Image (cartoon, rainbow, N blue to C red; front, side):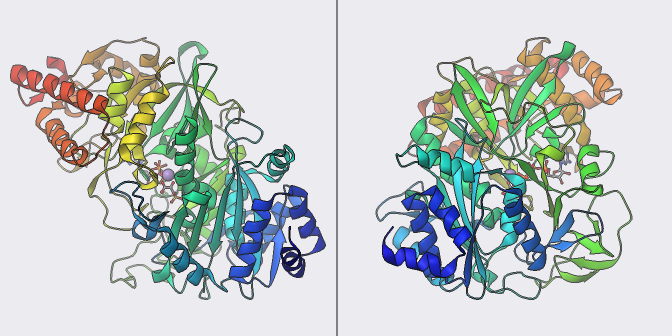
Length: 624
Ligand code: GTP
Ligand code: SPV
Ligand code: MN
């Protein structure tokens, strides 16, 4: 370290903080810290390690700073994001690309030098009068093949506190990797709160920016509080991880991982990709099954096996509709003492309330609008609700009673099935199985469509293509990403692939209850092991009536009628073909669409057209 850097660090931090930084002894770390000090001009700098005392410091600071307000129950706090900052904002989220480079026409990108200049201007002096916090964390289990060390710089204690709940501590990991001598790869995040109002929400939200400088494994964000834009290890890191995985031959996915419990104590691990707010947490939390992770999964081949690890250490989950009968485990955590951060719920007399909680909700209180009363119109002229639809909670895995005891295994868990699902009101059956890995990846993963939700800003309910539910986080060309998925399991025993749709409707009403997914998962578990037969529906294999009837009885103690089966599992060939047309139109514009994708789609179309010629447009599953 040169003398001026040394002088800069010494002038801003305590001897203790400096010592922590020096112990890591890595120039890239020191430079990133020094650069942030020079640019953002904090009053002081605090460096944290893995000690409980440092974790407690951030937690308390979030309360002292009023970024989190304590609630009545011990350990519970609420955090506010601004009215316009309730979700990820896609139009200001961009990749910074070197001049002349194009990642993919479908990705939001800008010239790196321009983006860096804009970000520097927005973050310059942003820490004045504030403390800069430096934290070391880890994606995946530390000291494992999945581990990616991460360095977070921010002036938000809420960001640090969230990361302490959601990720593994990483200071010792940095020390360990640093001690090996060679430089090692880690991710770096610099977030600046920017100017805030009395509720600690950004005044200059129109200047919210989230930029990925992937050439430096760095992300930069400013003028936002919503965790999806600020917590570096969540979606910001996913965008970097997808590129790292591409370089190293593994996969970084927007997926839950769960253990489904089969007959005779059999344990089957499943992973599933559903776009934001389409059921990952709800699936991983199904009663009687066990959660491994609910949002981010890394896949690696280890000793010839397809293995998956939860990248995270907690859940940043949607609170809407969480209630005692549908989600007993989460509901329990949210109503008992223990560490919980609520975001953008309604608070009245120190108690949180939210949409779909199954209780009477006060007609006034404090929420994402500020002081709120029922019937109030928001600053955008739109009607408001008691809590935001994308209101969330943050909790740790260790507090979940249904966490699989093996969830944190350093070598990950063996995957038997992969599931792709989206919000689809009129096309796909609730569950079907692909004929092969290639068929599944191409016709279920790469063609995933979903109706947009409140997890991103913009109109809801618009059908949008969302490849593997990773479209928002894709940081390279679509064709290459699909090819990587195809290649990944080439040489090994492949998981079976399934497509689900929890959201099929008839006459505007959902055909399934929220708990029905428990039945689809049990059917998937049985199919992974070939325990039940299935019917060929030309675009995959679907369950037989008698198997579902038995499973509905076993899982939900419900009688599943033939009519329900017909309504849910009829093959709507014109709708499926229309989807083929939409996909063809998209993939025709992609230069590097894999040949396998074209072949799989062409043979599926031929099978569907043949079935249509034989049996008509809409085919009852009893006629297959
Ligand atoms: P992210 O955290 O944004 O990645 O979302 P997620 O995929 O984990 O979604 P989550 O499971 O939290 O579900 C989001 C919303 O979908 C919740 O408000 C649920 O009530 C609703 N939902 C989940 N499953 C079902 C279902 O089977 N049917 C219906 N109609 N709604 C569901
Ligand atoms: C999602 O939007 O997919 C989430 C929440 O899981 S966040 O990424 O934090 O916005
Ligand atoms: Mn997500």
